[in-house]
Length: 474
Image 1 (tube, helix red, strand yellow):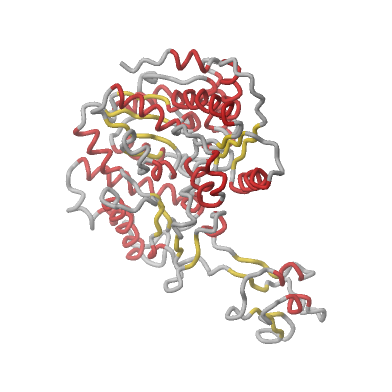
Image 2 (cartoon, rainbow, N blue to C red):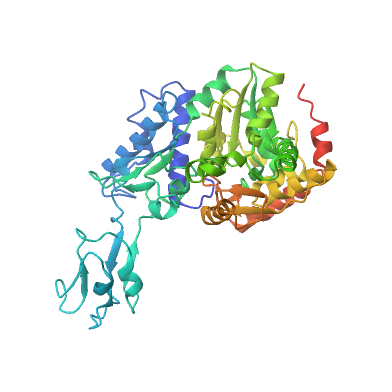
């Protein structure tokens, strides 16, 4: 069993592994009711009130995967309502630190008269939830910090306020108008009630029926499967049926060259590599959307080249990102990328095939990127690449760039650009903290992973231009 950060990740892995197993044996439908018993053997429950509810949730996960191929919904992030019933509703509550003081600053600050005293306790304050509007003024006024805002983990993780309780069921509800598909809620939900769609059925069908299936792999793979050598993992991917394994870093090199030229021409640019960053701009800062780079993402850029050389091939992106599952549905990307697979799902595919990665002889990528292309895995990597590309192209343009990761940094940077209070002319936005190395579907998130990605980057060519010039996909 691979090591994951949480049992939720482990559960997702086990379910995908079982689905994969029965997809290959062509009996997934007939085994629909049997798989939950494998995942939850009983007789005692291990996660919830009873094994029957645990099994029902597993069934919902299987059904979601079976329906993923036919869904027309562009948002790959879904809520399983039956799994979302253990978190208390958010809102401000009075804790044990309340001393029942006579100052009553909390009630004086409340604009809705929602705070009273002596209801449940002779002295302590109480908050009437029917009146409370969660403004937080009482918490700011309390000298004892006795009033706290209990926010559900999914709501707390979603910095764009796309998640709120359903008014009928109280389960988490995703507002698609605000969702940027970053997957932070998927990773943070303690009960695994929020999931990203899995296209594993389509991918297995490709591997079984198609002659040429390319795997385009994100640079952050160097921080995953850490107990093995990377070249062994590449061999394992090929053993699954992929005809070639190519680095998305090569697409990143092309993007760096394109964005450097676009930046020098336009004078101001917002990066286009992170689909969640692009979506966030369009939804929250529409007046800045005109500055978004016209370049496709590294994934789409290298896939486009492959498709131009081999139009009948299939391409699957492998990475740590839920947002890529949204990006592949975009009209600008759909012709080039056929599906997306996370590292968690890749691990399940490999283990289902009984591939012992550690025993394999290593092999190399079909094509590789430069040190700078590989550096896209970390926040700041794109900015460094653009500066290098300007230098190699002999373009005399001074970059005043800002690399941001996480929505707070991004929001501040975009606000400054919008208000004209910043002289920054290039913003690199990576929605996951730290960049792709912080993606929700990495196998784990440790400092060791970051060190391995740095080492991996240093092993490649230091020239972007020469790497791109050597591209030959024949």
